[in-house]
Image (cartoon, rainbow, N blue to C red; front, top):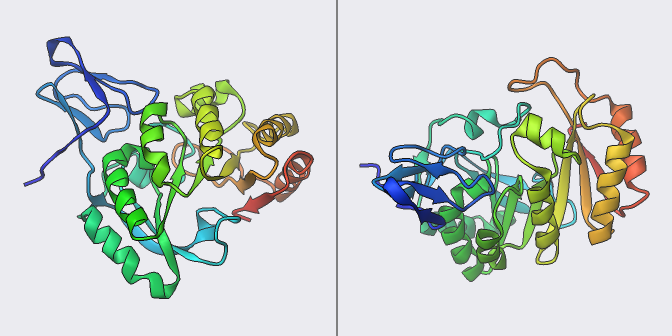
Length: 288
């Protein structure tokens, strides 16, 4: 039997409706309805998570693959993901698990912690919650991260940053590093391409950067977010938080619903890196 796990951030409303308060969408759900992320459902006037303990992908990866270049470089980390995402990016690189419900298997936080400890001799430093959006797996990530921290290992979030402050404040004491996607530096991009808003992501980056190691990834898409001006504005803002925040500029390849654009020219990435280095000390290129 597939037992649902109660969600931790929601408000009960009239007529058995509930308002999820995990992310800025703040979905209001009637009974038997699910949220934008596809991982939370109103069952009988209570909110439940549908993906607790359900793993779609697991691998021991180099930490640089997250990407985290300035956090324990040269080490390995056990990377794990489930399904679901609270943004709707038409260029999603992991759409088969972010926007569908693929094959998965069950694992408990204790079992995942034990697996991480078993892999220490192979260079493992902890667990990275990645592949899909980990905030939609919040209850499992929280329960596991507490155990991982107790075991003396590191927790890493690879996230779109679309999460409300209260759940982030509860989780972040157990998080050692984050890679946060900055999809673009315009709200119009977030609104039209991702069905979200830039402000919430900036708020997450700013808060997280004051609490743990943060690196930021920008997927550079030709004709959409590749202008030198936008790269400059994003880099200048990041440097106002800290010039040591790492920026990853990664190459776009055709995927999901966005198949009408060419891959990012290498020269575009090099020009963007040159501009970003005017403000930031560490800028890396990815997918090249």
